[in-house]
Image 1 (cartoon, rainbow over the protein chains, first blue to last red):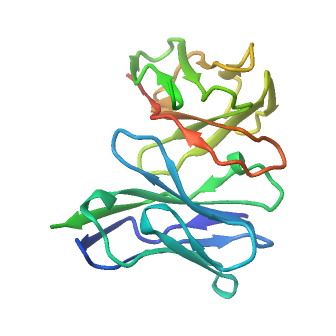
Image 2 (spheres, each protein chain N blue to C red):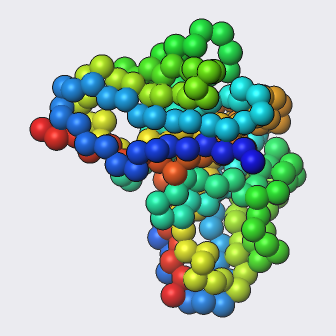
Amino acid sequence: AQSVTQPDIHITVSEGASLELRCNYSYGATPYLFWYVQSPGQGLQLLLKYFSGDTLVQGIKGFEAEFKRSQSSFNLRKPSVHWSDAAEYFCAVVPRGTNAGKSTFGDGTTLTVKP
Amino acid sequence: GAGVSQTPSNKVTEKGKYVELRCDPISGHTALYWYRQSLGQGPEFLIYFQGTGAADDSGLPNDRFFAVRPEGSVSTLKIQRTERGDSAVYLCASSLIGQGNTGELFFGEGSRLTVL
């Protein structure tokens, strides 16, 4: 069965430290891949997406993600975390050629930022 | 407004009652989606509209759930005979592009439904 896993339910980092959030998927072929952020009182917002091409993808707010086919992973990274990055982060996948709105979402990783 | 608007933001109801949740998408967006997000989980796809028609309702959990979009803009998610297990945040999203494309989704803040 197709699935997406975010192994870390909760991560705490200090402000200014680097961040990596993990995402693993299980699909028959490389799907389209997305990262979203959900801040309190706000709707989900797309951070970045991978369809094809360069496996290192740049997104908004200084985030990037690297697609690794051999590991079926699409980990999200940020070199220096800001207090405003505290939020819940969701990885999402959808089979190639399928409407992005039918994405399967992981269960999310909650990020806490320590001052 | 500029973004996707959902009302009510919170709804508390009793088991067995009927509930309607409304979504007002970004003006001009032809595609509209409904999701359900249970506590501690990611959003789960329910139904997708392209224009006025439901292009894909494969995510609706049972026939108590129904959604309409009569004029191709505002959509209403309708839940009959609510059950405690229906308690969740119901999210709506819209995009410029629909089936076969990968237009960015814009999400509303959601409607939190609590069934007592």
